[in-house]
Image (cartoon, rainbow, N blue to C red; front, side, top):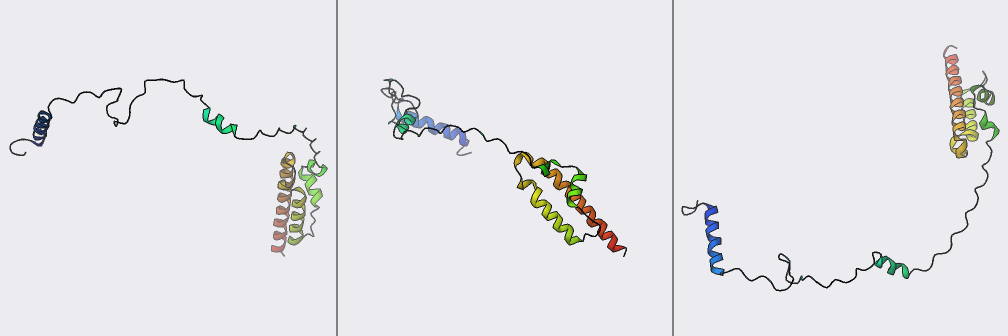
Amino acid sequence: MLFGQSVFQSVVERLKQEKEEEGAEPPPPAGHRIAGFSSGFVLDTHIETPPPANGNLDAYLAFLPDPAPLPEPQAEPEPEPMPAHLEKTSLADVSAELAIQESDTAATLAEKRRAFARRNHPDRVQPPFRHNATLRMTAANLLIDQALRMLRTREHFR
């Protein structure tokens, strides 16, 4: 409290005094002015036809040269037939192709895996044939891993 009045009461009293000193409210602004905007903003009551919605785009495109005609679409070539070796996806077919023998060593098995992958890896064949290539690689890896386990077991018992 300041001098027996609360802060709120003192602010209200001061505002009343300032209002009395100024006199009456100022007259409303002349013309079509909007209260709250700077004095430079005046509404234009004259309405013209609005510009086209794409006016700026049309003006920009007018400077560009005419586009070249699109080439005629070419017919898609016939898909290549699936290579015969990719059609053989059974475990027996892959086993016969790998020709794993009891005399194979870890080095020869690794070489067989690499050679088989060069011919059959899914990343090296056309997209329509990738499923078959994946099946063949899965079978080959299974057979070679099994042969390596058997090789280690034989060596362990010697």
